Each structure stands twice: as structure tokens, then as C-alpha cells.
Length: 296
Image (cartoon, rainbow, N blue to C red; front, side, top):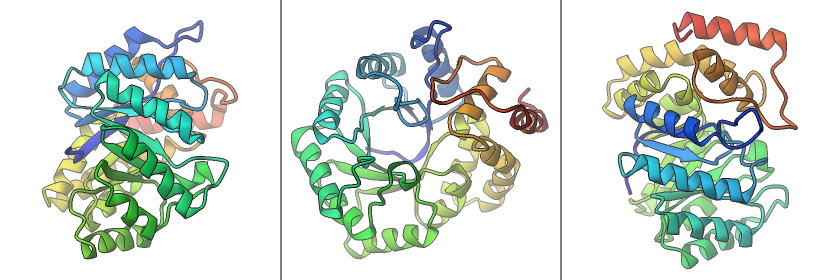
């Protein structure tokens, strides 16, 4: 499948009584598609996967697939620290009609590198949906290394990695090893908005983006310009968005993103505990950035 471009790691909008806001989620899906993104991810980290139930997660996958209706890639967040639970979610995503499943490296239990390989191999052998590996060591405590990535990339249905390790030398090493091994069907995708431009210059094919929740049009334009080799335009847009890229992580993701959407007037609602509302001084900084970008 083609994962090039900008995929949005969508927030999960909640109602005042703490349910998944289905109407709000559908509204956000259409807004993001109207702003020319290439894919949508539901129930990922930005979607508060750690505090949504599996029933809610399955409901969100169904809403995503139904509302997207083939217009862009519909990607289901389907990871767990239990391989058995991850398999159940990936199989659900496949049966629901998702275009791909994003599977985070198992968190907390810190599997060995050969354990990570066996995890993805088991999922790949047990399902038919394309699988994107998600590496985010700052949250999981585990970093999938270059040789394991290359080994996993050779599995037929493992199609990409969302790389959120900020080590740019690792990105270079990964892409070089993939080229050396002639693994052509596997894509490296940025998992950090602020590193997307340099990663594309190294050979990455796009981003799974938090920023695109808030400014989808400009983020998509930046990525498309970079992929087309227009680094003058891409650089200009990168620096326009840079303060937003930083301020959305001034406190734990997705707290600032949800506050941004609430200010803009898009469905978002609260964050679930143990996440908490932003501190006043963070809100002041966020508001200034949004005003500077004329988003509010």
C-alpha cells in the first residue's frame, strides 16, 4: 500500500459524559480529508489508546472505516504490550476493512530484539492486513534496532515503520541497510513532526502527524513539497509550523492538541485521567502560537 504523504494521528473526541464522540469524530474525519491529508489513524497514542477500552477502540475503527469510505487510507491503532491482545486488535482491524494496522512495539515488558521480531512475525503470519511498526522508545522503554527493523521489513505484510526515535543517524542507518538489502516495499515514516523535513530528505516517505490535527493544510503542503523535491517551499512551511510543532508537546501529548482544537472550535473535549488539563502558563504559550498562525 502507498503510505506516502501526511497521515493524521487523530485525537479521540470525548463527550461531556466521557464517551467517544462519534459525531465529532466523523466531523473531524471529513474536515481533515477536505484539507487534503493522505491518511487517518484512529486509536493511536494521540487518540489516548492507553485509556480507551478495547470496545471503544473497536468502535472507533468501525467509525473510521465507515466514514473514510475509501477516500484516504484508514489506519487502525492496534497495538498492545500483549501479543495475544495485539493479534485480536489487528484481526479486528482487518475484518473491519482498515487499510492497515499500526502496531506499537510492546511497552513496559521490554521484549528483547528477537522477541520483537517474533511478535511482528506472529502478527504477520496470522492476518492479511498490512502492518506498520510503531517505534516510540520514549513511551515504550524499548527501541527496535536497525537490524531488527530490516529483518521485520522482509516479512511480506510488514509495510512500514513509524519511527519516533529522534536519532537521525539511526534513520540514515536504517534506510541505508534497507537499500543494501534491496527491501523496496518497506517505507520509513516520520513519527516526529519537527523531524519530518530532514527525514524526507534522507528517504522517508511522509509522516504520521500530530500537528496535522491542528493545521492539516499547511502540514500536508510541507510534506508534499518535500516529497516533490521543492525544499525551498518545504523549508518555508517547516519554519512557519515550527513553533506549533514544539508547543503541541509543551505538556504530554495529546493535551495541548486537544486544547488547540477546543480553541479552534473543532471536536475534541477533555483528556482522560491520569492526563490533566494544561497549566495556565502553557495555555498562554499555546494561545500565542495559534494566534500567530491565524488559527484562532
